[in-house]
Amino acid sequence: MLNYSMLYPRETVSRRVVSMDGMWKFCLDEKSAGENEKWQEGIPGKEMIPVPASFQDFYTEKDIREYAGDFWYEKDMFVPGEWSGKQVLLRFGAATHRAVVFVNGTKVAEHEGGFLPFCADVTEVVRYNAYNKVVVKVNNELTVTNIPCGQTVTLPTGKKMCKPYFDFFNYSGLQRSVWLTALPKESVFDIETVNELCGSDAKVSYTVKTTGDHPVTVELLDEEGQKVASCEGKEGVLEVKNARLWKVRDAYLYQMVVRIMDEDEILDEYTQEIGIRTVEVKGTSILLNGEPVYLRGFGKHEDSDIVGRGFNIGVMKRDFELMKWIGANSFRTSHYPYSEEIYQMADREGFLIIDEVPAVGLFESLMNFMEASTGKATAFFEKETTPVLLQAHLRAVEEMITRDKNHPSVVAWSLLNEPETTSDAAVPYFKEVFDRARELDPQKRPRTFALVMNSTPDKCKCYNFSDIIALNRYFGWYVSGGYDISTAEVLFRKEMDAWKALNLNKPFIFTEYGADTLGSEHKLPSVMWSQEYQAEYLKMNNEVFDSYDFIKGEQIWNFADFQTTEGIMRVNGNKKGVFTRQRQPKDIAYKLKERWESLPLGYKN
Image (cartoon, rainbow, N blue to C red; front, side, top):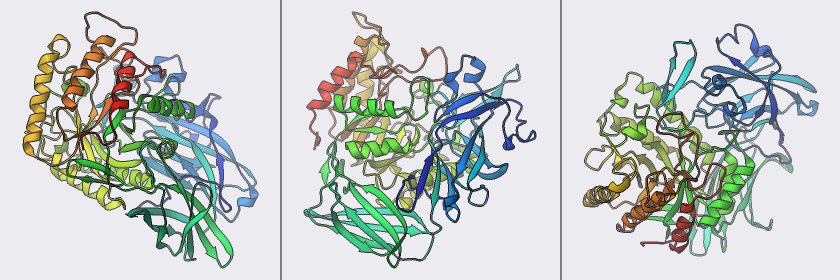
């Protein structure tokens, strides 16, 4: 189990939070000599870099953009004297892909996995009422024993190069916020909630874990700050009369205030926003609060100019405004859990999230988008290293669900993207991952994974693990593109007929479909890459979606153009965006808006 809390840093009567965001010292370590040269006590040079951000796109040198290996950050932090006697923690929103943290030269934490938070307890290491030196060694090399998967090679020049088994750029660094926090010695460690609807009322069952034995009280406040329910004890049920439900694009959030009490004294207080809603799969329907929902939206990326995968609050705001404008109601966090602030925004705006663990690249291919429909087999789950990968995968699932389980916006877990599922060796691997996700989630949300085109109904050995069948399909782009699109539709329908014949009685959604399009390109008659072809591609796909009543969602790939590894199939990135990387609409955006605004929420139910 996790030995640090995943609760988001919040200031309360008992907690203090200081942002460490800003300019940090920065240094590449091409020879991996940093620790031998005592960089943990302070790194060389005067170079500065922003945090949070990816490091790659600030510089003009290609050797820096493509850098693979160790690199270091340093910042001085002041710890107030009045924090003496509290538990002092340093919290990293993410360090991609692995990190070792030092404070005043002492190692205080290490973590592998580049898209989830971790904490260092620095209570006994820091000097109070004084400045302390924080040094972080980060490494961004790709392996087959950590997710996302890939390889790192050494070029004839002696320089290392990352070769991802996935189709997005290997942005890395301290890409999310860093916080210095002070908690009371006895504190709230974890909160779990489960909702039950009882007519117009609701029951919110909760479990609170603390680091001590003092009693716990829980209050639920409405959006006006009025108390609507309360309970005592680390476990209990909050009974809410005339509950306002959290609905799609109509969010209502309650404040859950948890206190540890010593008679009349508050030892610790933590406030968690919750939405009262239920989610389940029944037959071919996805139900929110017992009502059917048809998903419309996007696969996305945390990707923008200059800061790469670094969290950017302005880009986040723009993205949500565009999703509201176009009539979307959902997105998948392809292909990793996003910054926590994005889930908080989705909670407030009423968007549904399929939350995806960074299990991408579990199919050995440097051009997986080209080989996804060839039937290629790579025996990925038969490697000697697979047990090590599985443990990393299970850790990431635990961290993701522990972090995100209380968000009303999170309605499903995606546990892999486009893995190789055609060999028997995949089956026990999948079973462990899916069983662990069910065990960890108190709300028992639906679980899924995105099926690559090789994973056809006659070849895939793992689709039965999914509560929702999620398909990534590119008929009309990677298969039978251009004038051959009529053949693509025939092939597409043939596959969907084969799925239908299995009579799985489960909802199907499309988690990827799309066509690369240059915003500048127009051509009559159409050719691939033109805006006109993207419209024809969309029309064909929509006609297929509308033909099968078990298809309950469409999340187009991708929300916006994004950066990838360079290559002959990529023109400065993946251009399947409905919006450009600068968040301006391509022609297709207007056609999607027209379609999505015309579809009822319970379409095909």
